Length: 507
Image (tube, rainbow, N blue to C red; front, side, top):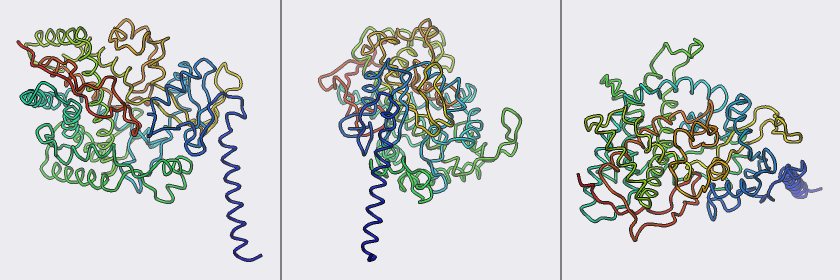
């Protein structure tokens, strides 16, 4: 047999084995009698993702189709067999009761070659536990109070820029303005940068913040390969973050560290707290164990995820909220009335304590996060074989991916009557107290919930309060009804602009 024949035979054997392996992998649930949709060889059950369907569309379709058939249905995340959870009691077990068996998110990270990927959201195992222990104290109510003045300062600037925009006409594109507001808040708190993109939309920090969500290093094939072979990808030094994004944020972090340390500057912001974690030699965990300091690269990764988690999610939620309020004058007026009453009790000053008194505004935000679920799916990875309690035949195997469809739960009529309707009364204190916590999941739940949820809610409350106190919103002929979602992102983001008519509130 010639060398050429041997080579052809070897390649044919490899292709044949791969096809056999793939077919077996994509029949995992069918062989076990677990209901599931027929998968596509390339993307599994994610058909149409980034082209004709958003991730929220996929999650909602699957949840509604299989709800009631069991604790979970089968699903294929690309070629990876995945348990798609349908029962909130199982959701609660995964996120809270049996959390130690589902601590990992199962995302690809490679901090050695791609330092910005080593952030809290993606880390697993001991690295996640150690970093969560270090970061949790930086998000206490006391720390939020220290950063509150920064947020209100930017919100006051937003009010001025908004009023100036009204001079050019009554219809305003609010999506970009809100993104610039959250950019300035997070630029200041997480990176120590006074970028002032509200006045300067072309600021490099604002432009790069936008590119974080647009510039992708890999296409769908690349993502599928990384999901299938994460260990091999780390050995091949494959990165997720585009180099120009890494270089930009690493440079900002290094320059900021050098400037603050050489000039002994304290701003009581998130970056200060990260510096403390880098330099404090006496850090201890809750059980008294000594903790190692974070490196410059780890510091940069945590500042970066603060940007990723807080910039687009908060500005998009605020945009959705104003869009809904513009169509419901009674709800908007009720929220405005409450804001004015609370401020009157505090002599017209917006204090940190005001936020807890804005009960109805908080209901508006909670309902916005339900109806427009920014993160439509939560993910976990099973760390040991997990037979589902009280459901013989249903088992989540070690290493299996788990998907929790937050958007499906948020649109379930059993939990939220008339889910298509925007109704802040879904979140009255009485209804929240009566509802299981896992029936509202914009920030996750349990030990691995969003560590920065206090900060995210704070910047949304402050920004919306400043705008609603001073401006009335209504729809215009340019308003997109219904809104279209961007199919190319994993988050539920708007495709296009949000144009609303605005007018100054007369005192």
